[in-house]
Length: 256
Image (cartoon, rainbow, N blue to C red; front, side, top):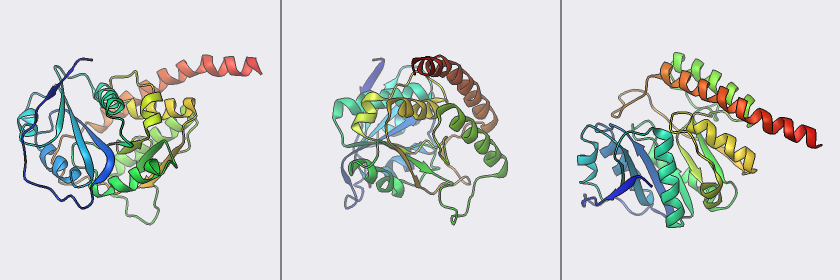
């Protein structure tokens, strides 16, 4: 394991009345000095434990986390979101939590939705819960048009490759059962991690469901990835994933 645990300081007390017992919230972070502080403060209102993976940040992310009463796992160099998620999964296995919730560090997601995602897992109704920005047709979709076009393409492509019928395959806001944390296979270090988790869950026969969440795209405090580069990287990964799945599908067909 190439990460180190850094001791965090003590911050001002946050509200505890809504804290969910047995729920760990993990935050992958790379150069998120503008958003990590507010994200952590919001998350601490709902989680028994908050753990942040500082994925080799070169800005003030690490300095800010030193002032927060959270667990910090530090990568010595930037390894990518997939690697950060893998580190969070390894940590969750060690903690034997009832649910692991992943949330992005850029402030796009509302921490108030954490109970919505965690509840089906804690109730043992699902192994993987994806926070969908598009599940509720009555909600106003704030996704910029050019991003929404890209999302539709990625959702369609991911569904074709993995066989999972989902409305928001690229959402980074997710909850996982202990079984999912142990059984999901994450091999990519990059931005294809959301697709790979879905693919691995379907392969392992784990139960996937979605819950509606809120998301914002204006006045984000944290870092956001270039949507074009992100989309292309995911499509390239999906092409590799499809090639990897094809021999398995052929073997299953021949075995019948």
